[in-house]
Length: 430
Ligand SMILES: *Cc1c(COP(=O)(O)O)cnc(C)c1O
Image 1 (cartoon, rainbow, N blue to C red):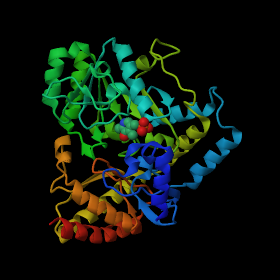
Image 2: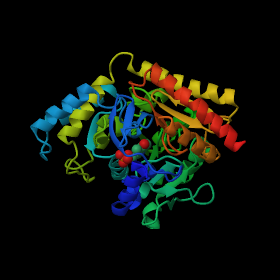
Image 3: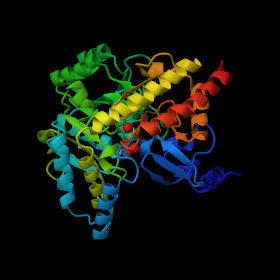
Image 4: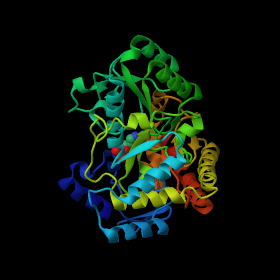
């Protein structure tokens, strides 16, 4: 039996489903996940020594490619000084200042260890600041797995959310309103009815957890205007898009200034760092200054911060995002051309260093349209690519990521592998 399968069987005996985060388990595409042993640049190597071009990049953080020597050196230096002190460190000031320098909307920022924590804390802060309870989120957007945000739309258009996980009491989600993404009119209607009760709206400006769906300009503009009008806070979740789709994140692409922004993924450079920040007046409501409680034993961990800070410095090199954007473009253009040549319905798009591929003739603009993508064709495509050394996210609901180490040759190799994969899709599914 192949070693990956053997390890997967063994993992399942001690770890639920064999994984510590569900999407890693390959449930939607079937088969055994690869157990990765090490990585370098754009490549990851499984336990059998097989090499793959990596388009997951640890789900976003590895924007510099794996094992960037400058980052590794900074981490080694931090490790040599001690792993964790539970006291303030200078590195925390430096990373806060670095983010403030890059992001005009951030006046103060607090660091946590995961995007989930950032989301949970940002919501609590918005509720504490406004003294209101209701929050609005959008169908298909993911903001971590805290109770109030694990919600799906109920029946009907203007309903309160129902928990999307068991173990979440309906009471906990009773104040979460779930609306359709990219539907400004719905938002206006809800604010007209209950605007004075709404603490905040939380949104991914480029939704990256229902594959990749950019918000429309009108939607983002409405969001900013209506929240301001009713005194609700706008929380833009840039855990995925921050320092990924552009240096200054999705908010810079839409020209909007959120009240609170969430970060994660790239800001840790592969170590557990996330954060939420925004206007000083709001941020000062957090303990120890204010009455909104928030804390973390390992928050601002010195080793993780050294990794994140070094990553943030390196991505500011001139031309970094131009190159990253061209890399994604080369990839999606190549894949679309092959699909057309072979005769498979396929579309793709990219923003900066993130991309979406869809087994559908046009790029989707809503959660509903993502649901209409052909999962079986994707599964065939995914396994063929994997077999041929290309590691894509194992689900039609995930975006893909390139790093600065994905050069033209790496992209060409990927496009070459896609000939076989598209041909297989064509022969099996038509
Ligand atoms: C990944 C992600 C999160 C959750 O971050 P974790 O570190 O996995 O808890 C939240 N929001 C968005 C947009 C994400 O992509």
